[in-house]
Image (tube, rainbow, N blue to C red; front, top):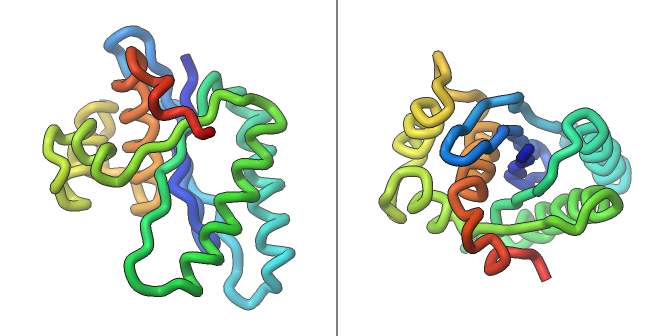
Length: 164
C-alpha cells in the first residue's frame, strides 16, 4: 500500500510517501510544496492545488493522511493554513476518497510511543523506522513522513480516522 502523508501549510506544505507492506515500511520520497509570501493568495492556493495533483499523478497513493490542524494563537495564520489544507483536500478527493487525518498527539503517540514527544524525538524515530541515513529536512517533510507512518500503523482501525 502506498501512503501519502501531508503536513498542511500555505508557505510550506510537507509531503511524505511510504510503502506499507504488513509490518514493513519503505521510504519512497519526501519533500515540500512551497509558495512565496509575496504572491497573492489565489495564486498560492493554485500552486498548492497543482502541486498536489502532481503528487497524486506521480505516486498514485492508495490512502492519503493529513495532520489535523491545531491553532492556539494566530487566527489569521490559521485561516490561511486552513485554506491551503482545503485546496489540498480538493485535489486529493478528485482522485480518491481514502482520506484520513490524525491529531499531532496521535502522530507523536504512534511514532514514538509517547503523545507528549518533542519534534526532535519524532524526527529521530521517523529516521529509524524508515532506515534513513539522516533526519528528513525540512521539518515539514519529516512531519509528513510521521503522518504517513501513523496511518500505516493504524490500518486495523483506519475507518475511525477517515475524514468525513
